[in-house]
Amino acid sequence: MIIKQGKRTGSSYFLRFLKETAKLDKLSIIITVFYSFVVSAADIITTYLPKVFVDGVLDKNIMLARNAVIAFLFVVVSYNIVGSICAIILSDKKEKRRVFFVKKIFLHTFCVRQEYVEGAQFYNEYSMREANLEKAVDNIMGVFNKLVQQAVTVLFIISVVSRINFYVGLIMTIPILVDLMISLFVNGLNIEEQKEKQKYDKKLKALSRIFYLPNSIRDIKMLGMVRSVMGQLDDTFEKRLKIHNRYMRKSSKLLCISGIITEALPLVSMVVFGYYVFVGRIGISAYYVYIAFYAKLKMSIEGLLALFPEINNISLWMKDYYDYMDNKDIVEEDQESGAEIGTIDTIEFRHVSYQYENSGQYALKDISFRLEKNSKNVIIGLNGAGKSTLLKLLCGVYVPSSGEVLLNGRNIRELRREDVRRLVSVLFQDYYIFPFTIRENVTAFAEDMEMERKMELLTERFGLQEKIKKLKKGFDTGIKAEYCDDYTDMSGGEFQKLAIIRAFCRPDVGAVLLDEPLNNIDIATEDVFYEFLSQTNDKTVILISHSLKYVPKADKIIYVEAGNIAAEGTHEELLKENEKYHDLYQKYVEEYIYHGKYHSGITKADACDRLQ
Image (cartoon, rainbow, N blue to C red; front, side, top):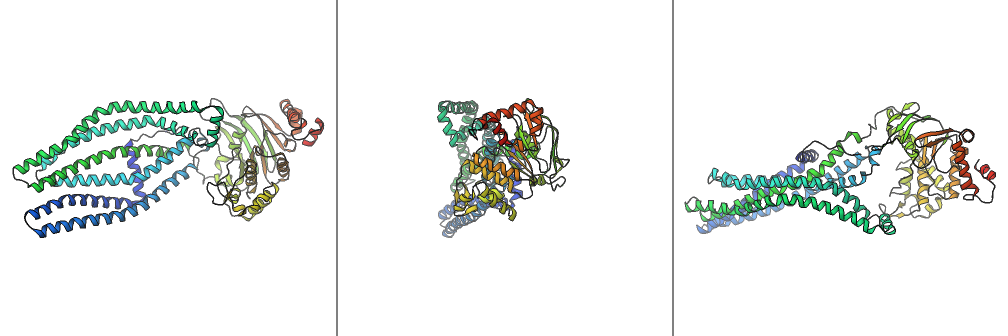
C-alpha cells in the first residue's frame, strides 16, 4: 500500500513541524530566541569594543581603554554562562521532544490497518521514517536558533552601517542578495536531486538489511549469491551517483558565479569605507570596525543561505512522517466506538470475500459458514487456499472486501474492537515471542491470579515447568539477551509451547484461533496438545492444520480450496459425501500413519481406528 503524497510544499512541512514543536515546547522556543539575541548582541559588542579601546589609547584616555577591556571580559563571561545554562535546559527539552515524537509514531502504528503493516515495503519505510524523525527532532531547534541568530545579526549590522549612509548600506547588500538568489536556485536543484535519490535510498535501506541479518548472510553464502547481491548493490549505487552527477553539472556554473561574488565582497567594503576615511567621515579605528561588521554581515547572510539545505532536509524527513500520520486510508476504525460484547456465542461468515491490494484475484470468494459456541472446528486445505486469511478476517485483523463477519449476529465492525480482542485469542502461524520475561510473554503483562494459575498448570502440562523451575528467577527470567539482564534461550519447539500456553491462558476468552500451532512441536507434545484440546469445553476452538489427525474429533470441518469452501461438515459426513475430502484423508492415513511416521507395524484399518 502506497502512502498518498501530500500537496504541501517542502517549506510547509518545516513550518508545520516547527509549529508543532513550539506548541509542545514553548520554553525551548523562548530560550532559543533569547539566546539568539544574546549571541548576536555579544558578537556586535565584542566587535565594536576594540574601537573604543583603540580610541582610548590614541586619546591617552586610560579610563576609556580600561572600561573597554572590562566590558569585553564581562560580555564574554556573561555570554558563556548564559550559554551553558541555556544548553543544559535545551538538551533536556530535546530529549523529551524526541521521546514524545517517537512514542507518537509508535502509538500511531498500532492504529494502522494490518494489511498495510504486512505490506512488503512497510519495514524499510518505517525504519527510515523513524530514523528521519529522530534526525529532524535533533536538528529543528538548532536550525531555528541559527535562523533567529543570523537574522538578528544582519539587522543589527545593517542598522550600524546605515548610520554612515542608509542608502549606501542598502546598496552594499545588493551583491549579497544576488548571491542569495543564486544559492536559492542551487538549493532548489538540491531539493529535486534529493527527491530523485529517495527511491534509491529506499533500495539501499532494503539491501543494507541483507548484510547484517545472520540468516541472510548464511543463505547468501550457501546459495553462492555473494557476487549477485554485490552486483545489486553496485547497480543501485551507480544509479544514485548518475542522479548526483546530472544535478552537479547543472549547479556547478552557478556555484562558480556565486563563489566569485562571495570572494569579491570584501573589495566592496574596502572601497566604500576607504572613501569615508578619505573624506573624513570616519577614523581608522572605525574603518576596521566597519570592515569587520561587513565581514560579519557577509558571514551571517552566508549562514542564512546555509540553512536552506538544512531546512530542506528537515522538510524531506518530515514529509514522509506527516504523509504517514495524515493518511486516513491506512488507519483502522475507531477502536473505542461500537457496541459492547460480553461473550461469544456464535461466529458466522456471511458471503465474505477478500482481495489483497494489487492482487488480480480474490484470496477468498463468497465464504459463508456458522460456528456454534464451545464447538471444535478444523479448517483444512492446501497451501495458498486462503486459510490464514480467513483466520485474520475472523478476528478482525483484516476487513472484508465484501460480506460480513458476525459475532453473535452483529457485524464485527460494529463492535468495540477492544472487546473483540479481549474475547478472541489468536495464535498466528508467524507468532512473536517478545524479549520480555516468560511471565510477561504468557500473561501479556496482565496481573490476574487466574492467569497465573493457568500458566503454571499449562507449563507443567506441556513440559516446560521443569526447565523454568531451574532458572534463577523462574517465570521472571527474560527470553534472549536483547532486553532483560537475566535471561534464558529456548528452542523453536519451546517457543511454540509458550505461544500455545499464551493462547489458552487469557481468562475472558470465548474463542481460540490456532493457525498451524504444531509446526515445531514433537510427536509426544502433539498428542498432549490434542488431548488438551479435546478437554477444552468452555471455548470455541478453530484450528487450522495440514495434519488431519484431529479431524475425526472435530464438530465441524471446513475444507477450503482456492479461496472457496469445497466442503463443510463432520468427519463422517465428509467421508461419505465429498470425494475430495475422502481422497485427502485416505492419503493422509496412507502416508503419515500407515507408513510409520507416527506408528509402525499396524494395519491401515488400525491406523484409521487410532485416529478415531
